[in-house]
Length: 513
Image (cartoon, rainbow, N blue to C red; front, side, top):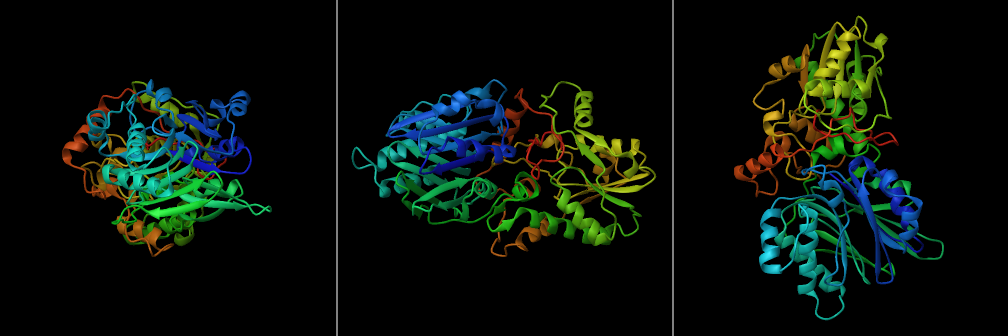
């Protein structure tokens, strides 16, 4: 889960890229970077931290040129010391000069590293699979070129070569020196990527690709469409646009967690309004509650800020219950790193959320969250509700139980840390201290999204059902992921909700949900 952006404009593009990354800040807060080009020269600045902290006026002045790319990084693995080294975009000077930013995760990155070293004769300097993807693309461009300069056909042949070699989830934007902007999306369309344009009064057209449509909206670009799975688009420095499907067999299977949790509610992904999908999730969840908890005696529905609000509102409407805001989120708490001991995690939750006592006192409350991952935060929130005077506390999750690792670019705890691992709903309810617990059915979750766009028939839902859409994930691979995770010294205490509907866009890690 990262935010990527690419722009080909007719005037200096540094401010557009900066503003676009601010809008995509929720997709990654560990590092940010911008690369631009003027003539045949690249200019780049990147570093650890929020967009607003990485870039100063002097940095922006140095980012010359009318086209460029940006990246907001959220790591799925690694240590704190890796953040600066693995900040994107990445650059190689051969062939042609190439800069790339990537969102997703290559599931065959280790095999590719060996192949790149032994066959391609290239050196990988970090642990980032994005650098692997960059070097694969660079090698394929070198093979595809028929002379000292590229042409359109050679670029698309190179992307087809990337598709042959790379597995997993990837949406990428790249700059080819002296040639133009390239963007492509994996053959399953797991990670999102949209394209838009801005037609100027002088007849010229500016182009933008981004992880979410909200970046286009706020920067004055008109959303054209999502990139199709296996599609590459190419915009040269004169603004000429070309696209091509570079792989024959494709399946559109977007990541379901984008709709549940990751994306801002004002984004549209693969023809689906994220906000409308979350309303539908609440509708289906309310119908399930009528069936399985008809006598719960709930007095009020309260969301866990922020991404669960649409689902909670729709649940309250369908159940004929009052909807109330019971938690206030402190939007000025800095990020904290996990320290030993449960008390630090509990303190972090209470620093970020505070209860409005009168909404709980003497009431039976239904708390609605987008998902429950580890359960630590849910347990502490339920304790807070009881301390505020709630007589009974029920919990509803807009997503099904998270029982499996995600290998496509979302940071998840190890399977042993997932609260739903080898527990049923009654056991999970006891673990988090709830009087009752309601999970969304996976069929209903898919129906919630499909109701907005019936064309969508497949989804990436592996963290719920253990079915990995790319078909290359083995038990050995999953064991390796968990072993690397156990050996990592990096992790963030989660914030509550996800800020997708607020302009401060606080990142939520899935560590403690």
